[in-house]
Length: 300
Image (cartoon, rainbow, N blue to C red; front, top):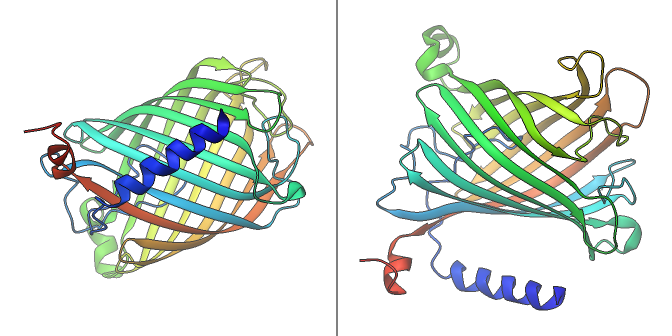
């Protein structure tokens, strides 16, 4: 059954790829994620009347991985990561639906066979400088039974753009744009989503911060991301117990992006497991135009 589903998914992807526009209107990262935005800084957001949905594919190789686990129960070591991101505007930029489908393999078992599937489904949006998100995520093993982690959260972020918010930055750095956001979230539903890398505690609040520094015409981007989690079982439920951080460099050509980055997930309140890796990644952004739906007879 799993093989049939995989073949069906591949067939759908190949069919859709024939209708993909790999133009400059890249999918947005407007809801708080560790990857840098692939939106052109001088372009408006994707127009709802022109695009059915947008997104990206990515594949990454963990070239150095001493401790980053390949399953939710912390077994194995990740070898490869594959991800599909899709999003569509339901009402302009104010309400957007997106989904992320993440798959991981275990380098200890041949690198190819998938061992974990993380599925995310969310509503998000932008209102002026503020972003909001309501998200559900489920992380599950694929090759054997084991721990499944799932949660639902709400997140609010405030956004900073140097071009609009800091004229002094533009005077000093005329060719380097800085975009950043920071915010806080509440995991209002939590089924085994842990508060530390060693799978202890249960996360309650999260605090996020992200920055993209455009080094050259949105073709060379330096980025960093931090994600803190608190423990609902601790005496102080607002105090962070885990820090996940990423630093990376992205190089772009048209709709393609090559990146190298390092992630480290570590406990803050006591000694314990630290999960870390270095990866190289290839990402391809796309938009599917509304004429695709019209051709299928699904729209006017």
